[in-house]
Image 1 (cartoon, rainbow, N blue to C red):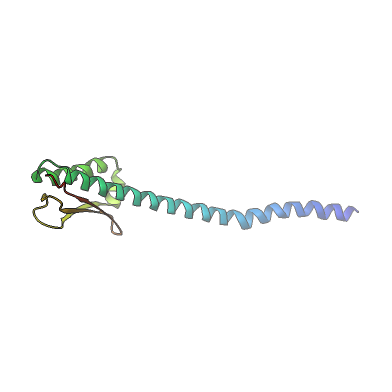
Image 2: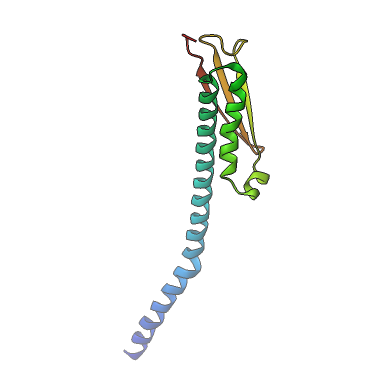
Length: 132
């Protein structure tokens, strides 16, 4: 009877040790993976929103001369919220393309493409007002 009690007590400790040794590293790796996926999803969402805002500002400008400076101002405001390390690690570029020229012809399709770093691109398209 004494041996059975000793074995039962010894096995409780080994279960905790097995849990810590085998499952804790898997949970840690899973947590890191989920964090990286969430970070990428937020970055994609931010770049999509930035492209939408830039093209919206471009097509609602009062004149074609003010359109590109206003779109760049949206980027400047976004950049002002970032840290210096983020600005260096992930540079942001804006490209505006129009289906027809001049860009402010009624019904023209305007596309803003935001490039963040080397690997992420987001685009948004808007139409110039038909009654312009």
